[in-house]
Image (cartoon, rainbow, N blue to C red; front, side):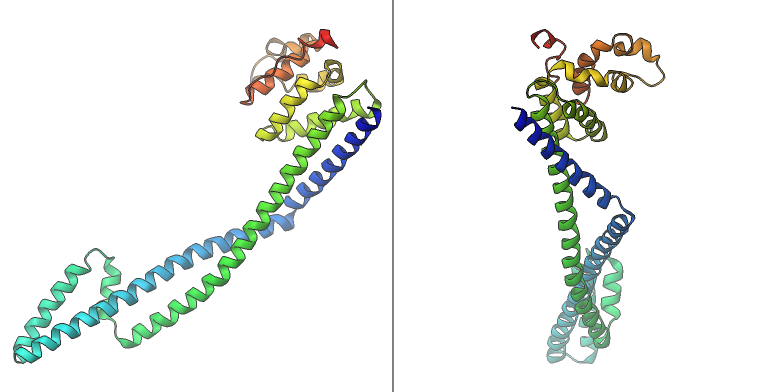
Length: 272
């Protein structure tokens, strides 16, 4: 039992060191700068996708208008004279306008006023934007995958560290390293109270670790548990008046964080 306790403590400390090192890298100026660059790439990608859609709509609208104009003009010239052709072309314009009335007005206007040179310029821009999007999408995917892997590793290190601390603290009589590790556990908890996995680990720890092992943290925890802004701490925090009520406060804090509150370990103190 002693060997298992020591092994769990070492594993917990090792995972805690990995977590601390990774946290330092994720919050370093270099990492924050890289994150800003990644966000800029994502914004650039979104804008490029919108520009690609705009150019595609311009080209499609222009080509459709040209086909309809040629088709209407050809039928008119074979059946009537020049005056009749002009009238048919005017009618064709009205028909085309009705067909594209659901499109943005600037697209309709540009497509109607464009010529072959404009179409060539749009095609060149469209192909350039597509190439730019292809490169950007790969870079954005790499950035997001790297960030996701780093955060997954961070959560894994943190959860594994707490799990081994729980296994060490719940085993056998108290050892010097055991009691010192309690401070580290509570520090991790307070730094990550919004993480459901951390709260789950702490709930299991409160259920399994003997009550007396929490006593050294009485005064350190009492100012953080049960206090309300602007209220008298002595009136709202019973642990200020009775240090031995800390386990009940610890259990109640788990309930406040949105988790189901475990049975108060103060009720289990008689069994240890």
